[in-house]
Length: 228
Image (cartoon, rainbow, N blue to C red; front, side, top):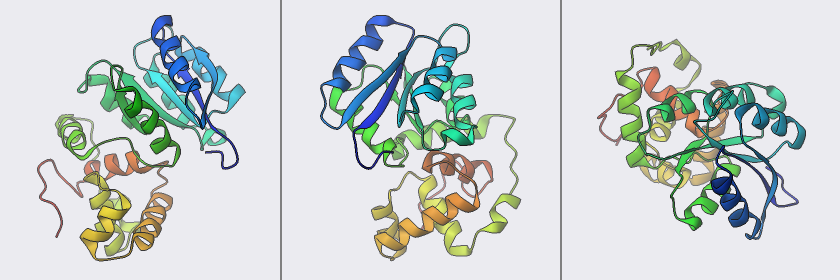
């Protein structure tokens, strides 16, 4: 995210009216700016390399290259490490949302979300947080766990200390740094430091990937009680 200017946003949607509506809303908001539009996944990839936006609003279903593959290509390129992707969907349990999060998306929003929620979501993701509320996280993870291609490998966690595993478990339940600090009886700054270290050790782009890792490694399972 830029520190001395507005948050730059790329809007990707194959429906022109929807795309233009998002652009008009974002352009009118102080601190946000539109740097490009795209109607296909291929265009999104090209625009991302050309404009290097802070945040991409990415539709899932598009011709040529879909939003999932576009997200995967963007988030897997080290030159775009600072670019965050928010996937846009019509239904909150859209089956493709799970694949988009695995592909590296930082969260998702419904296309009919309230305007202020959309604008707040862009800022949240630009700041490095995951745009997944705890309630949604539980439903998403239930779907993750039901899929046969989970690795279930716990070796990934061997690089973490016991405290870092505790922190990862809290992130996996959708908690922010302040909530983690309260739950684990540590300061918010310490919680933030632990989260950063976990992300570094696990090579995670952001908190959304930590949520996926927490469940796919078996550290948490659907229905896991909150840590105390």
